[in-house]
Image 1: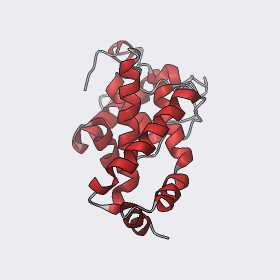
Image 2: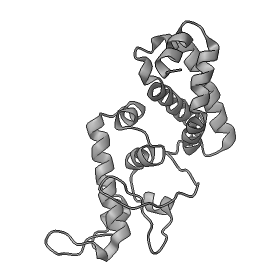
Image 3: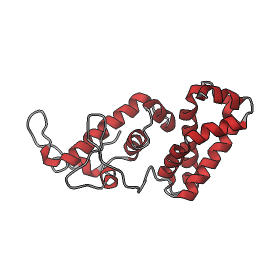
Length: 200
């Protein structure tokens, strides 16, 4: 059954339909919550809060096809609220091992000869850049969903990701990267990439 049809049934009070919608993405919900909360217990609490909110607010959803984007926004907002209340708000400090894939103009992850730890690498980004990068490439969320979650315009999200990619390329490549004038760029040539002084 299509997402739109399930959403319409759930909006009419069919709890089984809402449950089916949640089950389809339950692993993605958990990974997203865990990346913010950093432990299983708090991640599950956030998911439970999200489910309650979905029951209460489902009739407010205008476009049924946007259910998953909308529900993940609710989940992240709940995670941030919980963290804020605990006075330990940390953006996406996920300590899981992340695999490296080829770095391209739109993907900052790649395998490096030194096998640099991805968390160390991402620590060179500011909090907003890191959040955008992880939501895009770890959780595979579209730009519009990231914009909804963070409250920033899509153009700003794309800019954060683009600048982050350039930072990570320079750090990973070191002296191997040359600019258009043939000058050496990267972490050794420009310390701002390591200090995180560039902000978006």
